[in-house]
Amino acid sequence: MPNTVSTLPLYHEVADFLAQAAPTQILAYKPSDAMQKRYDALVWKKKEGNLSQEEASELEYYFMLEHIFRLAKIRAAIQTES
Image 1: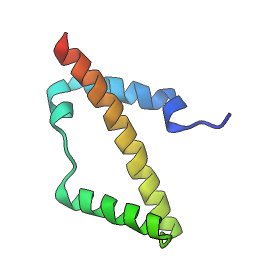
Image 2: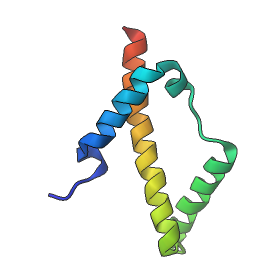
Image 3: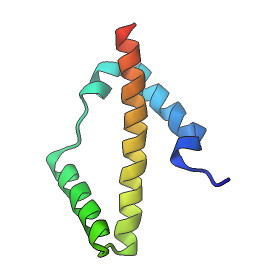
């Protein structure tokens, strides 16, 4: 079975660290407008079938980071409720 983002313990470890280090800041985090626009443009290009190999790689990094932050936000929310 190949490793996917959800099966890599490193992602969970990093998410735990981030959530423990700064739960309030993690919950409040939003990407900058420029980063969000770039992400949206890459997703659109992918839907249109016009994504270069370099852009596909960049988009994969965005997906990985987004997954880490989702994990961290879930953990941070649990910590702040406790």
